[in-house]
Image (cartoon, rainbow, N blue to C red; front, side, top):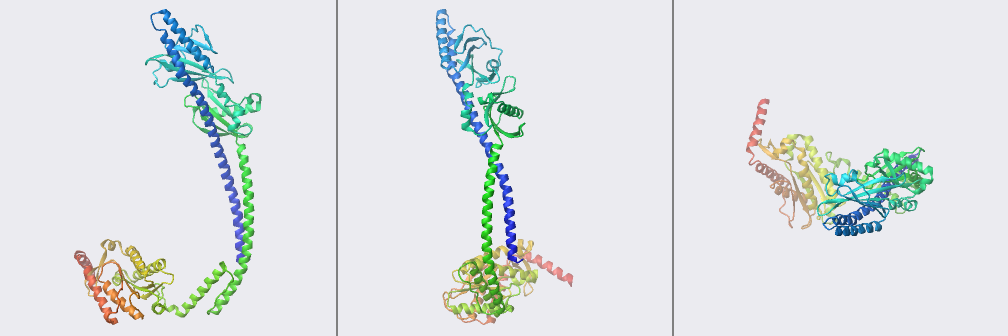
Length: 617
């Protein structure tokens, strides 16, 4: 089997594996997403219903607080006074107000107006006044809660559910009446929750939730703390199967602590092995009532499965289209590659100037162009000879540098040639060894090459003249940026090539050429730049002389630096020997200048070296 066929087979395997893994991930994600989203939707709907129930209860409480309290206060104050006729007249007038209040708000099936001792002053049952009720409620829980205990004055309302039968529920709403900062009595109203029950009938329920065997209900605790259904859809009373589901939901919810309050969403397996979800929200923190929405888990699980099947079909079709497209492209590409490989083989065997030609503008023509450039590079290097490459940096050497200089001079373009020289390199070699020195040269060459490539031009050149001298050729508009970047990068990296002790001291003490121990600072760079921007350059020797002159000047300066020749005329040419001598003298002066002010460290270093020499002797 050819390599291309293996690649295509591998691509098919990868695609099918990806399809399989995608289906698994998609299954898990869709089911989890559907489950979470529907649970959140169920909780939000339960919260809406709970808020509606709470609003209805709060409305009834406000009616008692705002209107009923006034009527009771009038009645009790009317009993005060000396004149019996006036008292009776005021009492009847207050009693009329109470009757009007009871008739206006007939949803209260029972109203009792009670004084501070617990005696029922007036009792209204189904809108009619009961004469002489003769009741005392001082032993009732709500009476003790509101009057007998020392509760905070803000706790002036009390709600207690009253279960009259399995499906009929009312609630006692008790209100403490305070007149002139004195507790004068209570009003207790019995509310039969008809309008609350209306929230849970089938018609209204379908507006907030849809689904077979899905329903909402209200659950609470009676006076003994037992869970009771407060309200549910009326259709359940005539359907035993639905009623059994409702009872099962209720029992499980009570078992899970639904009466303790808090938004929750629970899932359980019913007796029919069908999973159901119950989402419930408490009406308030004190009533012990919660609104629950119960739905079968399968309702949205089946929807998720259907969506997953549709997505898998779409993905399968898409993968098939991709496979067919890849196969067609692969066949054409293989045919072209076969032809191209034959042409490359012929080109390599000829080892002469030749070009591959591909019709059209596409990826294959680009590859042919790259191969042609590679072949030309190979031929150039073959002419040049591998002997000219520097063994340390693998950069072109003197012959190539000289040829590049002649080419750039003959082109007539504006250019800049820079020589990078490492200060104090020879002393570093003596202290750390030639292997370390070679690593410094390699680091510098790599650094210069990368920076010229990043900040220079595509045609720029980097060469190695030998030793620690690196040369690069660029244009006059790029050379300043390149020099600054090289200096900055070198100064950051050079410290890594020193021992910790030498880094902390900023250098080390060593014998110079005269045998005197001096401190040599951390290596720096001197970059001399020659351009044809302001004067004519006609020969590489002219550039070499400019380098010699500029380096003599640069050695007088401290730290890493570069200098660009801006002169318009040449000085009297210096001989090579004179330039080398001047450069050597400036190196020595620079070393002497750098050793000033460090006599103490030098003396210590001298003693160590002399002790070592004496010991060897």
